[in-house]
Length: 510
Image 1 (cartoon, one colour):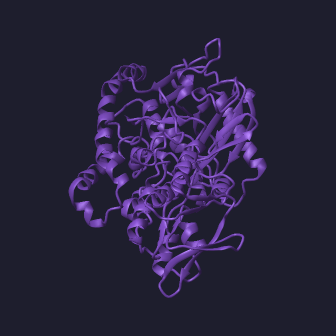
Image 2: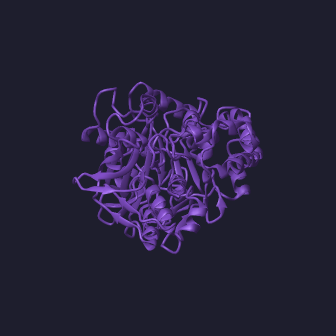
Image 3: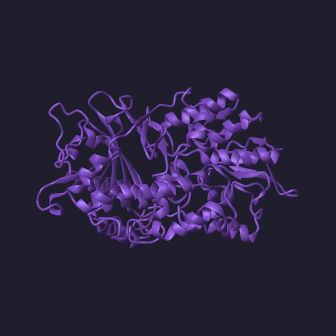
């Protein structure tokens, strides 16, 4: 999607822009695909919040068809009876502050009293960091000046938000919140450095409601389609099934001057923007020997490890959670609308799953985030059927360090995940009509995500802001800009890297 954002801004400024997409559909990881007849899946990315309001406004995305269903409640964590004195319980969180307090009080009255303070603290940090999403990455000197200094002073306490008992005593609440601090990243709630990942997932908004998440009507491909229509309305040319095999560089000026398609066709350009990962851009598409040894070292040192396997599932009936049974008419309830956190009764469960993958093994009790967009969006499944997104971790890129993800391995993992879900909703496995498992190598092969990393590179403190690989001009090749999530401000369907790269390219050409 970032490449489409960049194209729209550049074409809108008066430039002549062409987009070349490797796959048959546009959008990169933000796509909708009908994997099984009658079921339309957000095949990779699956929820929306981070898309910048400025981009929605500038590119008139609502005019071009963008519609988002806000999720409320936003979070549901069923608790197995062995973690709740023999009686299944659940924790449901949303926008109603009083209801949040009532829900949390089931597990800790103290936590219920301080939760609003925690949210206020997060909001304060988000307010400080949010403008960075719309501005070019700062240089190192900026750390000692202005607003960034204040944020950085708070960083140690931010890193400890989930780990410390100073905020909360309820394991269920801590584990539920911890999922946003580890999602898509090979880390544990008990390790430092995951505070920004948490912020990254609470700093969005939908229709002006801060912190809200939603489902795009028609799936995430509808987001990319709206951006694509906007770009085309300004005159952008978009070509699908047009993979790029090389970025050409003038050997004298060291300036990018075009691309070569997989078909051999050569296309000249004054600037080239790459929405591929930095690894693909710098180490696969550029001519050999064009980068300095220092730049090669930097690009190859970027961390792309990923613990994620995405499972897309078609079902014929809603999960019937023991902790919150379905109504007699089997219509979606509040427990189905938001993110459903499974195996999240205790932060230790998340940590144990992390320890499994550090040994090269698939987690025996993976962290499972279940979303059912058809519970709100009627356009993605036939009447009575539902689409389910299972974002799971932790899994290795190679099983036990050497074994590939065979079809048998994928099926075995899916069935293990389904069995885990059955512990919470006993009807789940029986409701499955079909499924697709996307292990890290699949995410890399299909969507070009190096290492299967959904963020185009880990969102770690040493890979953020000025340490993120550059959108800025002349680094390291003149006229070449990274416009994907491998550049500042990082991953997620925000459009921000695309917009910033476009502004840099426009400035460069002028």
